[in-house]
Length: 106
Image (cartoon, rainbow, N blue to C red):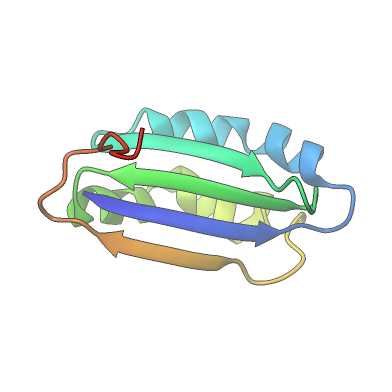
């Protein structure tokens, strides 16, 4: 499994518009073979910061995602109008994982 987190700083006041505009992209990503989950979260400290958390079965599924038409359209145009600065990304390859574990402390 690969796990990806993308932290996006948006232009002030554009988070609602960004989330609405990205819904088609979100739906297309969730429908991809190998997608485990794809979610957006808004920072409680900064409403113009969106955290996207996503996971795919493996690196090949992640590569197919990056090469998809909807990904290219998002990177090349539709999302850029909302982005204030280059997003930060965390990419972790977890080859022996299938998904979530239960938190042992509870």
